[in-house]
Image (tube, rainbow, N blue to C red; front, side, top):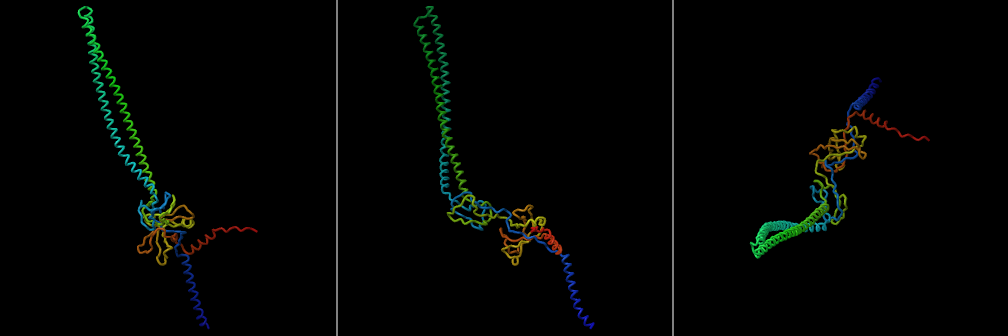
Length: 383
């Protein structure tokens, strides 16, 4: 009987020992093991390192051509949409023609002005020379008249003494009058030349001033035409919507020929060429104080099941200090894997998991219990 009791007791002891070993092992693991603690993002997606640029219309009009095709590569300055501008093109052509016609007219008038200025200078110089010659002749005539007067006075003295006949004295007086009249005639001629000089100078300056006014009027018309050309060219540029940056068209509205667009309307977006990074948003209570640069993370894409395609490994590069729109932004650098089949394209959404701590299961249990106890219960109303 004792042997039978021992045989029955032995398996029970073994079972108890096994349970004890398992329990001790579990308690040891529960208190000493280290497991990773992850914070999970509220939203995350892949983005290029440069900001996505919108394509907007700065003018209202009817579409005549559109090159907005999703996925199309474009360079900065490429024309994406053209708005109807036939009237402005005709006005621009007219303004250019008018400017081209005014230019030779102004050139011809400038040459005419230079020619008339030179001619007037020559005419005035010739008139001044004639006046100078007349003054010399006037001096000669005055000298001859003075000599004739002195000679007549000398002969008058002789005639009063009876040494000269009256006829000789008369001839001397007549000679004196002729010389005086000749001197007066020369002075009158000089006055006439001076009057003609002033008249020529006034008339010449008047003609030159008229030419200058005409040249100024043409210059004003040319400036107005050039300003009109610049304004119309600016209007035409506004009617051509171009790509703001080099990149790829990410989205666009349907713009068929004849569609009407309005100023400020968003027509599409351009995804700039650049490196792809990972941007995630976390709840402030999960990120602030826990997420730091250098921590490892993994990105699970919604469109590519991680069980089939795996995950994208990343490293935290920057953490925002202030929440925005209820979330804390975290930028992560992607660790590229050449063997991965996941395309790194802008806009792909998913979930980011960041390893923020390694703790024992016991510590995690106590931490969870502490969080629950830290939440104060709502006071109940007394009835």
